[in-house]
Every structure is written in C-alpha cells, then in structure tokens.
View (cartoon, one colour):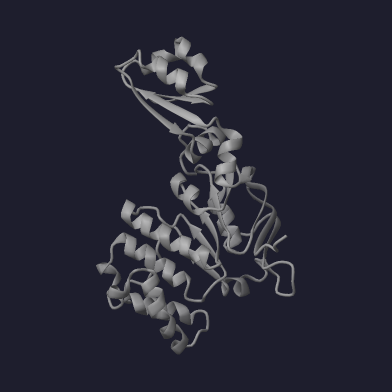
Length: 312
C-alpha cells in the first residue's frame, strides 16, 4: 500500500458547546486529488485552517509526510511544513504594488530561495498560468481569472509536493474555470497531490480522484465520485417542472420512481428505469421534463439535504 503524503486522524475542534469538526480522519496519497465537499457550516474551512496551523485542534493529529524520519506534525512543525506546501486561499493575497513576475520573485524569497533560482522558475510558472504576456503587468490590469491563475503559479514557486486549495475557482467565469481545471489536472499528472475544497459539484467530479463529504463536522462518506454515486443513488433522474408539476405528487406516477424529491416547483424522480415514467409523462404535454443520469449534485443533496444554510 502506498504511504500517504498527508494524514489526518480523529481531528476534533470545538467552539464552546459546538463541535464543528468531529473525529475526522482522512489521508492523501502521492499524485492524488482529494476533494472535500459539504454545505456551509460543514467544517470545511475549520479543517483547512487546522491543516495550515491557523487554528489549533482540540484533539487528533495532522501529519505531513508520515512514515519516515521526515514525518512532520502540525502545528508543532508548522514552519517546516509550510516550506513544502503550496497554498491557494479563497481570497487573493497578491501584492497590488508588484507586477506578476515581481509577485513570484518576492514570494519565492519567503522560502529562502535565491533570486537566481526564482528567476529561472518564473518563465515556466507564468507559462503554466497562461500569463507570459502579462509578466510586467500590475494586478489592476488583470482579470479575476488571471489573478487566480497567478495565485496558483505563486503557490508553486517552491515546487511543493502537496497543494491545499480552498475554493480556487470561486467567482470565475466558465472559460476561466475550465482553464484552471486544465492546469490543476496537469499538476496531478505531474505527480502533485491536492487537497481541494469546492462548492462546484462538476468541478469535484472532474478533478478529484476521491471525495470526502462533510456535514456537521462529520465524515458522511468517502470514495471515488462514480462509486459514491452508484452506491447511494438510482442511476436515472427525471426532472419535471412547469405549471401543475407538483400535482404529480398525488398521482400514480409517483409509484414509478424509487423516490421523489421536491425543490421549489421542480420534481426529481429517481429511478432505476425511466422508460415507463417518461412514457406516462407524455400524457402531460404542458410539463417540461429532463432525463439525465444521476450526478454528484444529486448525491450531495441526498446526503446533506436541500435546505439552504447560511454561513455561520
């Protein structure tokens, strides 16, 4: 079995009488992208903060590069760990007074790298971020997508083995998100390991080898995206919406699905065989239907509910 690069065991954090992370355990293997998903208040941000030494756990352990003489523990070895990490937070912390290249140069100095080493890396990092043409541009000249890519390039200046990315594509338009996805996939192909938090289910399904679903500070389930979908959901989903759709809850059509969920004015019929249901729905031409395979968003909503939660 491959030795993990990063290992969290029975991690617990309490604030007063509230337990926001409860006996959480997981690990990341070399060359693996682990996604952490969950609703607001699930404990994702607190977990990341503990992994970065910004918040101290009340119980449990956080070990980087375990299993050998180089094993390090957070927060005891925080400085040594951060020398080998790449971090992209939810909000950009780039220096607006510097150009793209200067941001990389100054950040590299924090790791004790010599200017000659950093300057040799800068062209490759800018090319990776698709920012070669913006090397001398100030941040005011960059779009939101460019800033996020520069943040990712900056996180790579020390050539880390492991990256911690906290919602790295929030606020990006579809084109910028897809470019960021391509860059993250390239990193995994190069053997980097990634811990990724995201609210985008298509992003989690596309990028992550394995997923960890959190709710109320606890691990709900863990596994590959396709395995989790197959284990927890019926394979077919028929969405029905339009005037009068909710009346179907009292009709015989409900018996043609394993279960039916309601969100606003839309019905979600989950079934192992949609053919009979679709045939019956042809008698309701005023309704609109969408037949599709079950996806990660369906899994997320089944495990954590459809009720909107506000961030604490």
